[in-house]
Image (cartoon, rainbow, N blue to C red; front, side):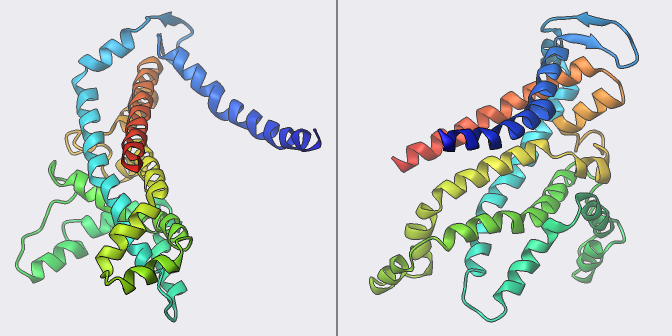
Length: 285
């Protein structure tokens, strides 16, 4: 009874904050998704599922959804796989290894807006990247002004900034793997790749699932880079669903339609999360 009372004393304040800042606004947004509501108008018109039906007929929304999936495909596999090898590298017992860990984690500490400004400079027509390409005889690339290159360019920025963040999760998992397993595999003649394929990856399966879910949610919610680097352009090539929600809600002031789009995005993220969980559960059985 004593422990339960203390547990509730910790849970209730957090639950109230969650309700006030997450659950209640989410419920209000769900209600707005069934209405036609403008911030500066007094009336709220009930339209039922019209906003959801409109979304599936809206070419702009379908294009934004396509852009979002494309961005997710570019970002999430890289952020699931590459940090594993980075974590393996910084998990070695070497002099100054903590400095390398800090170096790889440093981009995470930089504001996304500052990161966008720096990479805008790198991606500019006369920036460093095009200058380096010119040294080997390659013509300048339209990183952010080409409809084909803008999403890979934004994905590159996201992967660069996220590597160190997910590296920490894998590093924590690696340090919990018994060293006896690696020593036994070395005695059996296993090489570098065999050790990690048969020991590291199976032991890191729960963390891989966690990283896949978190990186998926982050990819579908990414907004700051699109706002600060491209403003959804060129010609809508980098307009994601979240950016479209922002544009509809705060520029066109169509709160009902924006709320409907946001809940469609919520359903998509939930389905992808369940798909990831089901896939990993099948592989573990």
